[in-house]
Amino acid sequence: MSLLATPFVGSGADTALHVVASVVLIGTLGAALFGFWKLHEMPIAKAQRSKHQQIGLITALTWIGFVWHWVWVLAVFLAFIDTERALIRVRDIWKGEAKSC
Image (tube, rainbow, N blue to C red; front, side, top):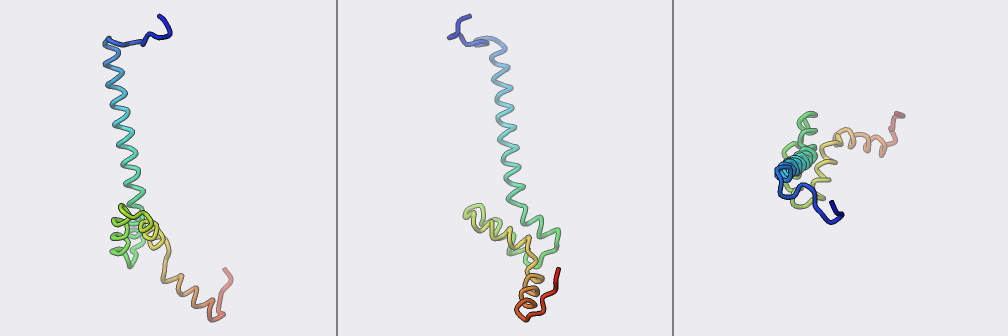
């Protein structure tokens, strides 16, 4: 066999290797799309778990985030930050009643 010869061409092994490569390619693309979908739906899942008051807003921002990605980042912030506790903390700091954590 020379360096320019291609192994397995024109044999049954060639067809089998193409089938295996196709299955691996489709599986990889499917796994990547599934992972992207789960990552993209993360704000909605977090909001549902914590019974967030703004779940409708977070859901809408997540769907809009498919087009404008910066909106998805806003949905992540809203889902993971408890705004009520954060505002109470800011109010306490503003009034000088900050507690040491």
